[in-house]
Every structure is written in structure tokens, then in C-alpha cells.
Image (cartoon, rainbow, N blue to C red; front, side, top):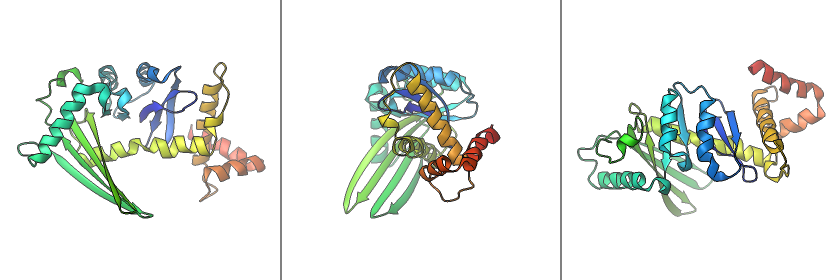
Length: 263
């Protein structure tokens, strides 16, 4: 499950269940900065017991972390400059730990290598539960683990490296488990946003008045979930299923029934 902005024209915050590939909820916001206030409101609507909530750096706020823990869930929050003191401490911690070979520092490590179409990507994840030294530890409810993710991409002989840092309330997961959850966070881009933009042409929707934009956003997401759950047309894309539903009323009915069957 994750919450983030979902549209460039009409901004809303969406809660995405990565494991089930379905949108659990959304709230519209007038400005992108209002995501910070919208996220707790959206979290309050959801049953989160036992879940892991992953949020981009904009949602890395003390009150949001507390709200997640109070709902019986755990968090993995991305760090950037909006939490400068915390971000700097975590960056310096991992830099020093790597220089000293993690001497006297408990940690776990996991590495994966993927490659296709001339691209090779190496992902390295370090996780450490050594958080007692942090000056801001008590300000973040249940803070238990610091995470460093390093992505090394080689494309056509050119290599680039990117580092991302996270904090998590999980104290019992290793680097492999945390890395898998962080990587799953980005499924919202390929499995939701990209499909809405390319297949449903969401970015070019010009409806602005009232609740029209938000209501249509819900309809697109509902339709996307229905097409994914209707499996009689094997190996067909969502776009192909849309065209078939427009031409074949029987198939359109099967798509609609797939929603009620799921419910």
C-alpha cells in the first residue's frame, strides 16, 4: 500500500495495494503541497493492520509516521531534503559505516542484478537497526531501521549510480525484505500511472468543474481493476480488452461481472 500524487493536471493522493494491484482509496487536493494533509485523512479511511505503508519523501512527516503506527501498520518513508537533519544523519551514518566496513555496526545486505535490452542494473540494499545514536530518534514513532538503496545502471557502456535513503518502523526485516517492499513501491508508476496516461489518456482530460475530474479518476481506476481481473482473454493488453469491450457487449458484461464477483 502506498500514497502519492497521481496526476499532473488534477492532483489527488492514491493508496495503492502493490500485492493486489488495486487502488484502495484516493483524496483530491487543490495543490500538490496539500498532499501532506491529505495523506493522514486517507490513511484514516483504510484498514491497515499488519500492512507496510511506503510513501515518497513528501510524506516523510512525524505525524504521518505516527498515524501509520497507530493504525497497526509499519512504515517505510523515503528521505530527502524536506527532513534535512534526519536525511543528513542517515547519509553520514551509511557513508561512515561503509568506509569502516560496518565495524561494530549491525547490518544486513542484499544485492540483485537485472539485465535486458543492453541495460544492466545492480541494486544493493543495506539495512541497519542501529538507531539509538540518532538525535531525532524519539521524534519518529517506532523508528527501528535505516535503509540505503544503491542503484547502479549501465546502459550502452555508460554507468550511473543513484543512492536513496529510507527510515522504517520495521525492526525485524532484513535488507532483502525491505528492498523488496521499496521496489514494490514503484509498481504504482508502471501498473497504474503509466496505464492511466497511455491507455486511458488521463493527462489530456480537460474536465475541471466540481467533482468531475475526481469522479472520472475513480471510474478509470475501477475500469482498470475490472480489466485486470477479467482473464478470459489471455495474453491481451488492457488496451485490447477495452476495444473488445466496446465491440462485444457480452465481453463488456463479463468485465462488469468480474467487479461484482470480486466484491
